[in-house]
Image (cartoon, rainbow, N blue to C red; front, top):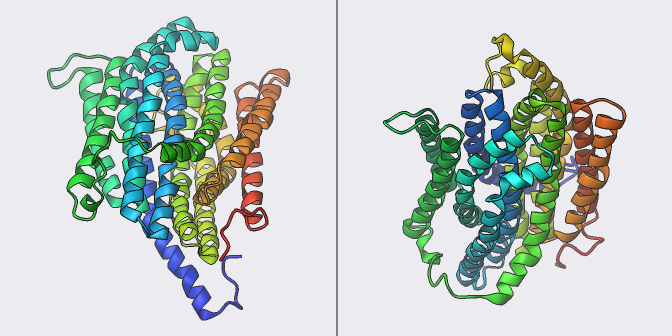
Length: 465
């Protein structure tokens, strides 16, 4: 229970202080996430102007790239609860934070190198998933320019974890905002051939996003190196020095996070591949609906990141009441927002879709009508989506990641994908059936995540006073 009328004035004041702290930390993280998704959303919007075929190819490429990127982000994200806990403990804070960040950079490189090799064979991977050979070939060209942004993107996540754990996320927001403007300009110039540059089409969009990710990493690195509040940590000092126990700890916490994100993103990627069985219109409609749902998802994801920091700081300080307040505050804010988004998706779907295609063009009518149907399904699972991501963020603050990973695997693939296949192919619902399965998987994961959070003391996840 968030507010109890029988609570003391000091207890109510503590809850109000937590709401203020969560909002202060959360809104820049939310906007930063929205800004980051805007990088690839810009790609989809620009590529959509090249026609349905280019949009479908770009969607396949982005989904393949994102499957690897988000898994890597999950592993590197382990730096966030580790740094937050160090700030909560206060002892050897600067030393621990610097060494954790350093191993975060090592982790980013360890993930990027094999990922580059895999993405270079994007065409073969997509064909293996029974995609149209022409679409697979065009998507691979796009990915070959997009993939080089992987390492700077992961390095940026390590930097962002640092400024968030320090509860100064505004700098990440400012750098990301400038990067969006850069990405829009680069897409406009490289895709369509402006400013004296050649018109590169899909290749130009991939290159623009890679350059934008480099901008993100370099920009935030300059801030933490020279900013008055950050330079005392000397984050890049002696970056080549190994700290093997800390690296092992980072992977022990981070690998389950990465796996959980992989389970989630791959089930949505599999949905794209399954959509390919129903034609280009289905893929294009799915691309629009999933981009809208993804943009909405960035808000509870930002609150989940804030929850990880706030819970992690309380965890490091061994403050069990603080853990409770931080977790439930993030949960309440996330559910309120996602409920509002559900209403918007049902009430004004064409307004949302108009950002991606011309709703007045009869050529786009089949895509628009199918996208509206998909948005209805998305509206149904918004609250569950918010609950599961915030629940995971709350548990990460307690450095509890292994069991949530198992929940994600069973919920998304064992339950959700099974229902997608059943409804889409066995019962003949087509693309709508795929979305029914996705929604069911999210609901299942949300329920078990929140059940684990409510039982955290009984399971020994919180420190003794």
